[in-house]
Image 1: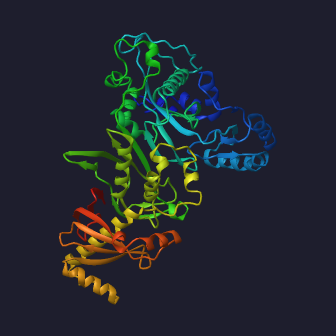
Image 2: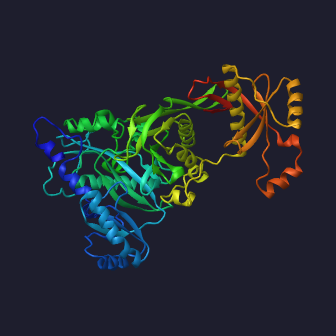
Image 3: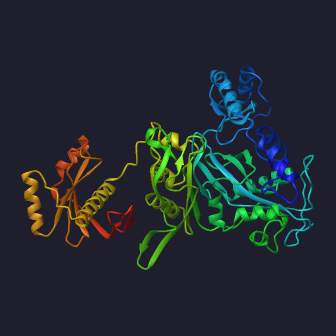
Length: 550
């Protein structure tokens, strides 16, 4: 396609040259090129496997475990891990079949499987202008050989951006991406940048692209994985933390104008030597995290959800995550989507509904809080099934994720038996019960419904006593009629609520603990700061204990 565009008059392809696409799109050839450019490459066999027997021999030489891959692969397809010779024999025909089915290319190869790595990638933007000096007058040299058939320009300008961490994956499909990574040291980051620029020069690559690496779990070393010769799904996190419009950069490069001068000025500074520039990244501020929202139901083993969207409401572009005195902390929210209410999502295309991005100018913890809140405010109903918003929420809540311990096997480690829903803490369950009671009472008053009759003499007596104190008692069952029950006492001012669990003890430990506590200690206080709700509303805005809960 790119070659046909290139042959047209007065038409430019927004991307690299057909030669670069071919060279880097082939995983076998791209590894050879990367090695020639001085890039760290995963040990493996660069040739094409011809039989299961040859695959076994190569795997033994490389060392188990190994990864068998389709040469023309991408998107996590055509990849299999083998831990012994028998798995290699069994996997060979399966991997070959996937390679043919997905890529019409039966070639497969083997490389060593790096266990528990981080998947980290470098976004780049490269452009050519016919001059012999850089924007600040620094001479530009190209010590690397240009591949045959590629046009050599007098100057190749390269911008590298802060790395993206893309390790939260399911079946090699990315779910969460963030920038920058908490893993990399400045020294490792600079070395990665230098190797990326070396590779770009070797293939004379222009336009936006991404070089992906596997990084050891301790951040001590890294290996070239592949180069994506396009703008990737997760590019918004880079745009959010740098303020650079990558699409605009692609357009300017394709139009022959080179990289926009204001982007170059972010990196090229007076007094910088060529050596200083080699490991330098575009300056950034804050932290951004992106979640891919899929039409997949995690409660049913991530089965595809198909059907019409009955309700669809995106979160606002700015979200308040905390407020102390006169200082308010907000996150900027970006949603890249292409769906509307009534649209039918089918099984014939990628299940991606949208990309949900949270940006904090301050730090990672606030970006996480902003994304979590955005998930709360995201309304997606229909599809004949669920979506993965609640799964994203649960990943964000994991302590290991919050401290940045996110190897590529994160999901396998934390969800070995699948996903059973978000597990709420005791305090969160109490808050939910209070919110449920408030919304129920609000709905009852607006619709002029009579109050529900409470059953049980002891409960009636308790309610009458509290009614005398101008309190309303509501019983809330979370999870249906036979779920966990809470008694909520709603004060007349609708501000301070008393909540008490009515459910039997779920364990011997809870029972023993309960015997030691008196009823007063079992009752918790929940403060409701704000309530905004009407029965016709899709989302209720409630601030509880100083935290906004949607």
